[in-house]
Image (cartoon, rainbow, N blue to C red; front, side, top):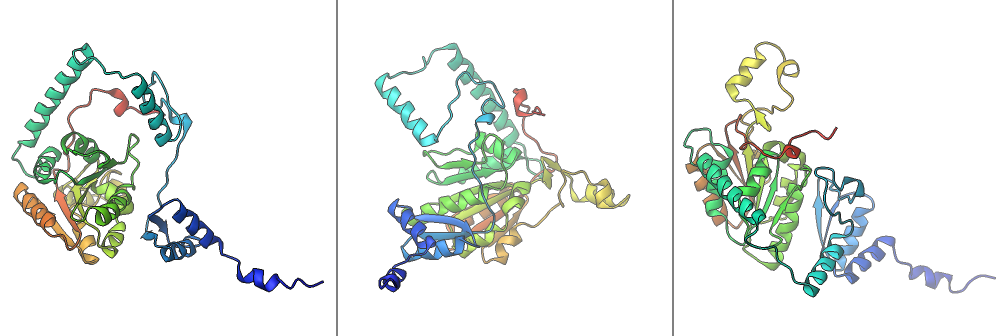
Length: 337
């Protein structure tokens, strides 16, 4: 016997994309980020119809929680495995029950303060060097002088990120984002875009300063188009040493190529010298700067901070053989193989 209600029920059917979008809306999700394709396109359209903002990315990101990684660097006294929000909440609840503070006059605190003082002195000495090309510390010293106190600081790279953590200060919680302990490359611009969406909607005028090594920038550099498409309040700083950890200057590069082709003589960590990454930004309508001196860096950063109408990229050339100060902890540089 035919079902007379079939046609009526068919009209009431809802697509899976709309169900997902409605679920996101119910959970108060305000933004979604995705790579265009099936099924992201349908979900994005449905989400936008419900007032959720969609940011179309050009590079896929991933997050993983893996118990096997606990203790990979240094054997911990205690390991915590779980959702970071849940674990943090549990820790705070226990601290509320039993308030505790590490004794400020302990040997550990004394050693830590002495180390902080010596590190600060070493960084200041390196930052004070007047020679050209600049080194990492000189660059970060001049950047730190102009950083707004309420800005988001995003950092990605090898030496760029490690040194930046010690020199570039942030003054608010949840305002520093970087690639983490394992230095996973390719996440910097995605972090910057997400932070910029929040800043643009909730704190107009707040800026995102994204500091990238030249190699790190290469992993997701085409996200510059995404930044310009949504006209996000991001200033990209590319600390360019022509390589991964270290590179060569133009003269050395040319001399190498006199012997054989690049594939035979160029070391794997070297990148093309003096690459004009700032032109990637100008190609999409943003503002680009190529700087080689502290004065040029100061001027370009000042102009970028003053111009709130479009994103900027400052390509900062440094000494290709520049490196960070010597590290005391073997686990920072040893192989785990």
